[in-house]
Length: 326
Image (cartoon, rainbow, N blue to C red; front, top):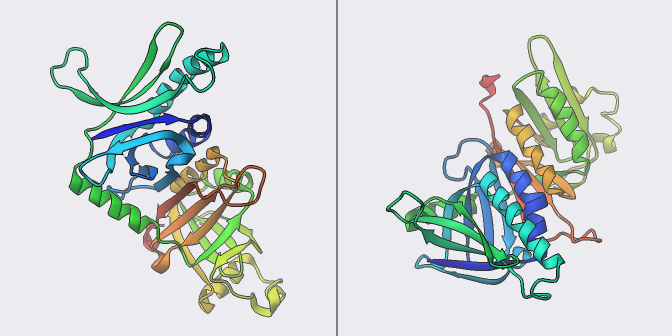
């Protein structure tokens, strides 16, 4: 199997300043998965434990001169330590930037390449796989090697692809939360109260969060949010429930079949909010059919517009807890 590509300046900035800092908060180890047209960073898709995060990029979003070949339909996947990957990228980027800023090689002649290689580590008799970054320094090529796992077998790649396909199922109703900082600040306070958070989402555009213990109940409600998918008109045009408490409103919405509620770990919920480090423009929350999981979709706009950048996709799936776990 072979993989080799040149990182574009946009791809370098996207990974180094936004995507890798966010994904590193989701978990140290993830699967890096290359196909003919896409690159994926995948957390917890095979073990099913913890928050699943799926970051997908069209090859043009990150690379030029993209070459991949394998006997498994040109698909290659392996596990990698994100902190080591980020450290190697920052290190090679310093050399690349310094050399380019001094006019090294002229425009377009100095490239930051990434490729899969096998090398014999020191004090070892067995070649090991690495993801390697390479660029030119003043007098020689500069190389940074990131150790990776043995590439996944055909069966394991098929399992990973099946899990990826299953993760693409979207909730029937999604509500948009434009202010991620406000939500993160609130959940940061809530995580000191309890371990389980109730999340309710209505077709009216309401997002209701609540933590309850034997001593205290703390909640927040975000109303009249933008709704994608299935939606409904609030009773009385929204005026009939004005004088009711948020708790009563969301309970009635559930009884009418206009809302769903799940319980998730506060720790998982807060971890998913760390994706704000990727600087998305907004986020959508939804509950999967049958309450299978809580889904958070982060949306990116084409710079200078309000059009969705379809070359980048990032979403998380939070496992739900049994109602009795509280």
